[in-house]
Amino acid sequence: MQFKIQAVPTHIITGFLGAGKTTVLKHLLSQKPADETWAVLMNEFGEIGIDQTWIAEQNGVAVKEVLGGCLCCTSQLPMQIALARLLSEFKPTRLFIEPTGLGHPKELVDQLSQVHWQTSLSLRQVVTVVDGHRLHEQLWQQHEIFLQQIDVADIVLVSYHQQMSAQDEQQLAFLKQAYAEVDKQWFLIDHGQIALTQLDQLHTAVQMKKQSLLIQQHQNLSQTEMAEPKTLPYHYVSKKQVFGQQAYIVAGWHLPKSWQFDADQLLSSLQQLKHCERIKGKLNTSQGWIDINAIPANFQIDFAAHAGLDNRLEIISQVEQDWLAIEKSLLDSQIDNLQ
Image 1 (tube, rainbow, N blue to C red):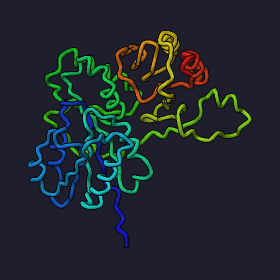
Image 2: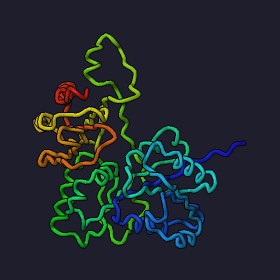
Image 3: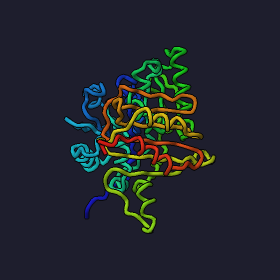
Image 4: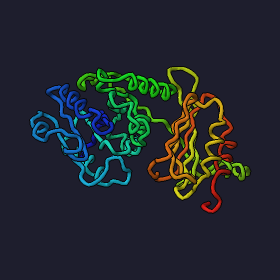
């Protein structure tokens, strides 16, 4: 009879380089009951700074590494193989996954939330560790990977908080305000100390159904239902309830990388939107790739952004917006010769 792997409680611990996630992981591993087998999946030992000998000395902690690839990339077959082997060989009762600090954790969370893994893994709330006393640095404020790590987190652990300056405190307050519309917990921690019980709640993935661009749907009103698009471009929209309050509406567009937009026209139209709790995006414009991270009181734009895999724009609102009008405005700013 084939052995059926039970759903293993699984924790993703992410964070920017030097944030202190290694210390957090060590403290979590120290809480392992003697009769359980825990496992850790990582890219490389050196990337997260845990001494291999220290790991080997921990009774009941199995370690698997993935070499030459990023855990966060959905196309990384080595990660899937390593994870499957770790589960089948060691049959852990709890699993910790630590992506590299320069990876894109959203892709990893999305992949492990798929039906394929749900019988094997029980994904817990995603944890991001941030270095509190470096929050004032521009690298931390605008770096795409850092912002994505905050985006994907259910729980944010702020390390080195005792060394935070007034500027750091101000930036932390800004981050909390920027993410006020989502169910995100913030903890100040000392020396990586956090109780496992505080992280051991189920991760709830936001289900977003892909659909054709709204303008395409508008042009095909005779069709009762359009098939879900398999490739770019596509639009999505979903609603999320927060603490029993009014639901927030999340809408976005994923467009081909080759599409380019007039920066002035695009930004002008976005800045005119009303009642938006948050606007974020990575877009290929006439002024190069830009990152947008905006809340009502602060419209931040990084004009020195790295190129993206595609164009992305997402809007979070408490009220139903005219998504078709927003999409038309977006497409109107597209530069014709790259359509």
